[in-house]
Image (tube, rainbow, N blue to C red):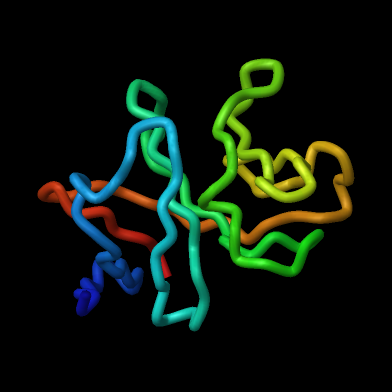
Length: 120
């Protein structure tokens, strides 16, 4: 898919996919061309925000698998558990619950005209 970009007040937003490409309470991987990396998009309808974007690269296993993890919460905070070694990463800031010295990159995401856009 060709990613469209929009510049809004010196902020660049890149379109990653349509909202219909997302799976509720789960993750999908997308290519973020501007950062030359994969991101995991996690869709949690009913929460604010509904969509989170974190690095798809698991720093513990060195594999691009975070989008395949299990979405849940720890003490009310949304997290994703790595599918390989089961570390939990907070979706708000990417910090690993089990080792706060490790974190995933995070990006701001918005849905506009049914398109999922990421701030680059």
